[in-house]
Length: 178
Image (cartoon, rainbow, N blue to C red; front, side):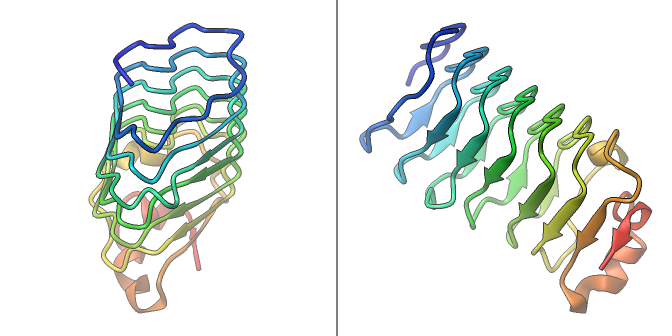
């Protein structure tokens, strides 16, 4: 899907992406304010910067079966204020800057075990994010601001054998680790 293909299509409510698609371009669905859900085909390898930015009605994004997905661009889901569920593929290794910034309806999130890096402000402004389950056994490299604006009493569940590393790592140590 080419860059800006459906940008600002405010009446687009749903879309079925065929298995032949491997790439969602930059801002492809940006500000599609009526889009409520999308399930990506397993063939997706890359999601461009701002791909779903400002899709204020998007409630669910399921990338669980997208095992070929290696790159999700910065701000891809930024300002998706109705986003309640975002499921990442198991093998993704980094979360881009501002990936879920200002997704104020997101209450919980699972960070897959192979994530080694989380970009700046990835979850900033997720004002209702109360629970994160992080499967990464090594603390992902990240700046201090990845959780700016989340509740200070947010709990982060981490692998038991890695607890000591998370307890001394910024910003992880600033939250309730279990």
